[in-house]
Every structure is written in structure tokens, then in C-alpha cells.
Image 1: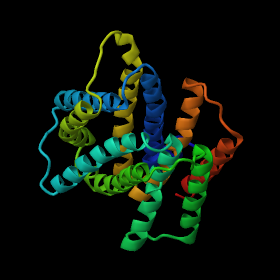
Image 2: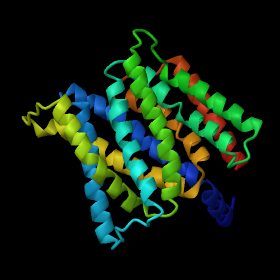
Image 3: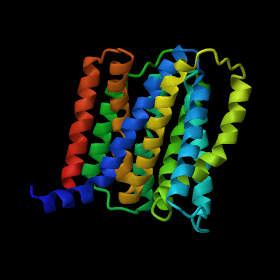
Length: 293
């Protein structure tokens, strides 16, 4: 493959590539949040931290790049929807693991690529083939193997919260898919997190008002998690800028796989044989999609 061919290949696949990089950033968030929780830091505080970092970094990048903070009129409804859905994802997904297992919550949440596929088929926006549906099905089966859900002690409220976060993710992808093509991702992230931060702070004050700053070193995992979140969010917006919602959502299924690997490295959790099988199914399916593109 010569230099020109490599450039052409990258141009065609940078949307999926950015989706995988975004998944890596998001995948590191859960294990790091778990480490922070072991140190006595509430998950709500971790969510506030990453949103605050995103707001500040976006502001710095915007000022340094002399970007225009004005949102075009046609993008504003999408921006509002992005803010609402981002807040729902943060609060509902985090809230669901207080009632059901993390693995079950993740399985419910990661039905959103399937929802994206169904909405795309209904809208008729793209030419969906049987092969595409089979690939989505195989990826979802692989996802179940990777996460290994625990169906014991199912709480309806936890299932509801996880379901709301999943539907919010679907809505976020479609709205961000439009907004990211018409507005700079840095400006979008600034306004989205400016809108949701007060809601996150209010939730923290209600759910976990006690905050003791005895040892600042225990907040190191939160700092790293926040930086990973910043990269993940920007790569997510770039992915939606350069590829379709459908393809980006499909490649986003690498997040649970990357989370499992990160948990094994950071939390010393052992990967099960089923997780290896699931990882292979996901990896092979995405390679096929990449080749077909």
C-alpha cells in the first residue's frame, strides 16, 4: 500500500477510527471511576469532574483558536437535545447501577446501536442490507459475551434508568450527527457541558452532599478519567462528522470490549473465556465492515 493509498484508506475510515478512539476513552472511564469509588469518591462527583474539565478545556481551546461561540440558528434545537440527552445519559446510567448490576446496565445501554439501526431502517435514510443486519446481530451477541450479564435480583427501576440512558444515547447520536457536521465540536462540547453542569451539581447535592477533602492524591483517578472523557467526547463528535450515525454507532460497540480489557489491567479483573469469544466476534465483524467500506 503506497502513501496515496494509505491516505485514501484513512480518509474513508477515519470516522470509524475516531469512534474506536472515543470508545477507548469512554472504556477507561468505568474502571477509573471504580478505583475512585474504592477511594470513597462518589460516582456523581466523578461525573461532575469530567463535565467541569470538558467545559474548561473547551473554553481554552475555543479562545486559543479564536472560535466563534455563536451557534447557528438551525443547530440550536439539536444542541438543546444534545444537552438534555447527555444529562440523561450521565444521570440515568450512573443511577441504574445502584439498582442493577453494572453488566446488566451495560447490556441494556448498548442496545442503542440496534436502536439506531431500527430507526435508520424505518426512516429509510440509507440502503440497509441483510448482511448489515446480520453484522449488527453478531456484534450484539459478542457484546453479551463480553459483558457477561448478571440477571439475578433485577430491579425494574434500574432497568428503566438504563433503558432511558440507552434511548438518550440513540437520540444523542442522531442529533449530534447533524450538529457535528454544521458546527465545531469544541463549541458544541462547550455549550452542552455548560448547560448540563448545573444539573449535575444539583444531583450531587441531593444524592451525596458529604464531601471531605482529606487527601488530594485519591482524586488522581478522577483526573485521569476526566482527561479520557475529554478525548472520548471530541473523538465521538469527529466520528459523527466524518461518517454516518449508523457506522459510528456500530464501531462504538468496541467500548465494552475495551472496558473489559482496561478493567483487567487497572482492577486486576480476569477475563473469562466467553469474553475472549465475544471480543473475537466484535473484532471480526468490525474488520468486515471496514473492508466493505
